[in-house]
Image (cartoon, rainbow, N blue to C red; front, side, top):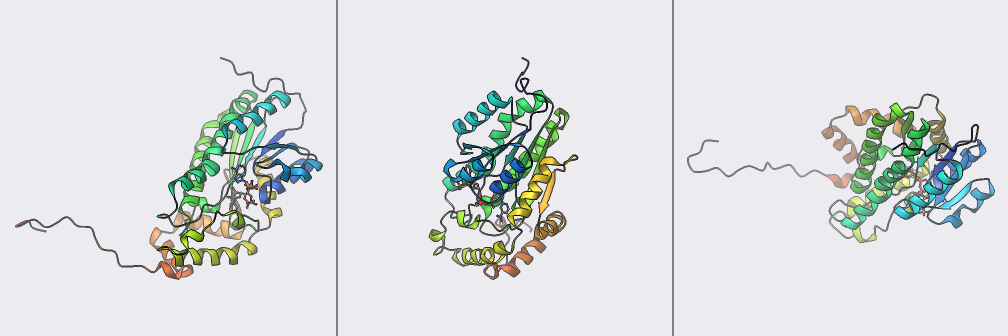
Amino acid sequence: MNDTRGSARRAGASPVVLITGCSSGIGRAVALRAVRAGFTTVATARRPETLADLEAAGCLVRALDVTDDESRRKVVAELEERFGGVDALVNNAGYGELGPFEEVPLDRWDRQFQTNVFGPVALAQLVLPGMRARGHGRIVNVSSLAGKIVLPVGAAYHASKFALEAAMEGLWLEVQRFGVDVSLVLPGAVNTKWAANVPEQQEYASGAYGDLVAELAREMAKRLPRGASVEYASSVVMRALTDPRPRLRYPVGLDAKLLLPVSRLVPGRLWSAWVRSHFPSMRRTPARAVEPPVRDGARR
Ligand SMILES: NC(=O)c1ccc[n+]([C@@H]2O[C@H](COP(=O)([O-])OP(=O)(O)OC[C@H]3O[C@@H](n4cnc5c(N)ncnc54)[C@H](OP(=O)(O)O)[C@@H]3O)[C@@H](O)[C@H]2O)c1
């Protein structure tokens, strides 16, 4: 069956950009940049009342919870109906489920993946048929340096961003032949209210990993305010959106630029030694081999 989505698009119309997670931080700044640059900018958030000033700036604002299938379909269908499709999708919405691997309940792992992975994947699946039909499109994902390196007390967040990295790299390999480009923007620390949106961690404080949890909180309190500015991070997202020769990955900030090559080159033991220097309670108990029992008369 021929896919006719997008065929009603007016020639010369300003490209339609759909952005998730615009209530604050990077998403909000990208929406402002996009609307000022002349894009038809669709700024979305779970609570549309947070988007009043973006609406005043000229954005079209809509409610969109990236974990909600009905909400995703409704927004994309409206844009197809009204504008003939979505030219660019910015998957920005996300949060960090921080806590010890052993103690983060499985339903929280699930919510982390629903938001950071399955939401972006589902939105990409919804806009792709129209992009293929029109022979162009761009999907920019706000991933993270956390999708390339791993710190303690963040396994669920890291796993979700690693999964996003792999999923979107897979998509990139598949859709370039249709004129669709896919990019991943990898911020290191950015000075947003991301840390304030980390779900409650109190319950982990008294557990077996309480000392590590406290050390991570200290590291974040030290590093995030010194991180890259929202203005800079949003300018990199805009570059990914408008680059005439888009790259697959765009690091944001010195930490990301330095640590991305490290993630490829440094062996795991060396990495864990470096991380231990920042997390003293990661002290190492010497490993003990798991060996099969020695049977009578058997030689070892
Ligand atoms: N700040 C950093 O240091 C940093 C570093 C690397 C990567 N990142 C990534 O950058 C992206 C933006 O984060 P930020 O730093 O700008 O933090 P932020 O200010 O907390 O923004 C996160 C946005 O995601 C939204 N969101 C969360 N769950 C959602 C859902 N289910 N549906 C729709 N929107 C949802 C939030 O909306 P609500 O207001 O409704 O919660 C908020 O608008 C995230 O993907 C984050 O992982 C941030």
